[in-house]
Length: 124
Length: 138
Image (cartoon, rainbow over the protein chains, first blue to last red):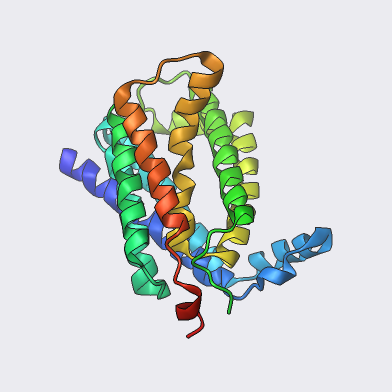
């Protein structure tokens, strides 16, 4: 039962991470300078909705929600909530592997510090 | 190419905005869950639970806020690295205890203070984690 719950939450975390990678990939085609003023923002919303990667991301979010709901029905979520902080490590790894972002020492230090902080806030 | 490893004040405020909106949306979802009157979600009452959630206006207010948040988040991603934006989004974890302390005069226990300090330090490290301008030109 607990292993099943763990696997559900783990796969939910992977899908959530995947969604973020798709959103980031999709946003690459939008120029930061074009998102300015009311007209700029309206055009931006239209542009975003026309990017295929965004829709892949939306379906990943759908999968995440479904898995969380299934996990909710399986048992006590407070046991697996600390796993949520794992998301930060997954995102860092995925940013390096799939987005080619430069992960500097400071970024690793910052991310680990945040994960430790979330665990401390969570268990108190 | 602009350096996407630098956290500007504007981007920082955008991320904080998404965190505040998300906290409010979560409050709405909590209200939606409470409105179903179901305390233990099981396979047997899952359909009833789902029905209650979908018919609650709080759910739809939450979904509206999430939609707004999504677009703000994309504006953030257009400007900076995902590995920078995502961890900075952890301010939600410190906002709730700090607001409870300021407005509800709740005491924050030492363990939680340590956690808050770790998160703030982490966000600071991330904010200075960009490549040096010379390297960024390559």
